[in-house]
Length: 288
Image (cartoon, rainbow, N blue to C red; front, side, top):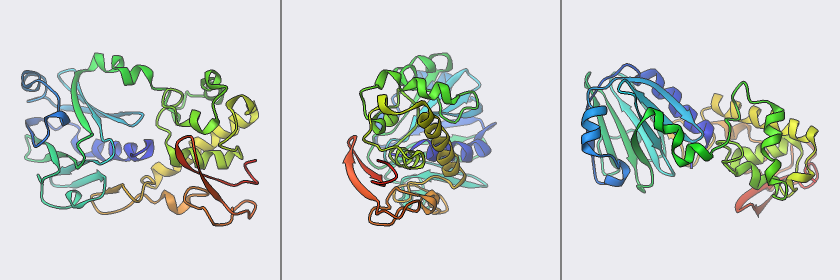
């Protein structure tokens, strides 16, 4: 599943292309559960509306409309968003739908704009969805009420970061980092990378992490996420854009998928184990 930097890459790409465009029509193809919205609501609040903003909360995209409604979009594991007009943009799970003729058999929703450009939502496994909701209700959906703060927000401090882990004192730090109710958008790659940067073992209990270590972990998490956004993401095996370009963060990865190689900091061989339910990469010396 794409993590925060990958979804942010999609948001930034769409933001330059669809703001100000007016929706002419919406077609649902092959999978009603991908677009679980009443036709009456679509006709009244979506058709004829103009897109005013493209936002992101954790791993969820939010497209705001002039009708004060919002399209809430979750790509899940195999989702894609592809824009076709004078310019072309797309990102998501890599298959020919990103560059081939659309709609195709993986297209679930096709949105036409008044200028004859299109936005397609493709999803091979049909786990992703687009929900049309009143904008004022978006903060009240279960996911939004439970999800933690955005780790890259300017006003999210190191002290607040450490405080978010207080109720998970008996949990190991890797599992706590992956908990979306603690901090939003952190997945397996950036958990491993930031823990390595902070020299913290993924096995350690939250209660055993010192304030100084939490401050370092905060810095490292923000560093790796900002770098990943700059490089277009990191899930190079299951995430590409419409030009076939893969997120290049993995070229800079220090521990993730580096098992069997020497740690760049101390020379010890990087290990991979199953921890917190995920494949976990760490240096047994740097991260004792």
